[in-house]
Image 1 (cartoon, rainbow, N blue to C red):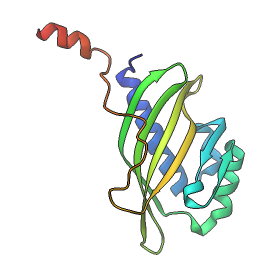
Image 2: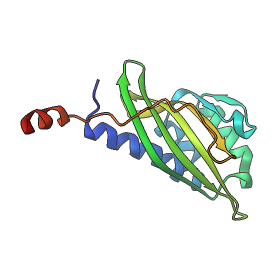
Image 3: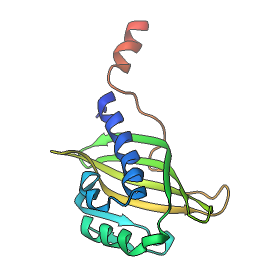
Image 4: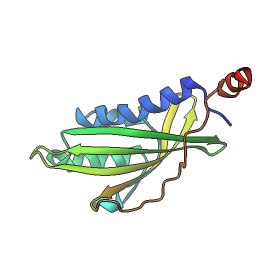
Length: 155
């Protein structure tokens, strides 16, 4: 199933909004970016697996000054849409108040809800060693709506 350009843009905006909400401490708005039953796995960072928006909010509040001052998301790659949702991989940089910077990979499953796209599952993988592999669920960009038509018109 192909995603429309509007859906792709909405997914990009969703991932970007996560960083903004975290950076200003708007954890009470997590329901705008996550499903109510989200699974959020930060085990690789030592935080375990959280279930539900409330648990994610509580963990972010408890972390307090340990939260990064900036969450930067880049290299967003969107997979093919299925009935289960869309797998999305992205890179993240976290800038701490001390100036230290950490790198992560976000492996997400996003789903379309009646309120728009939401993160249903997120796994955060810390990047500590150069060239270390991780399972990229998305192998290559997929065509967007209209690509096949344009290709046929050129031939």
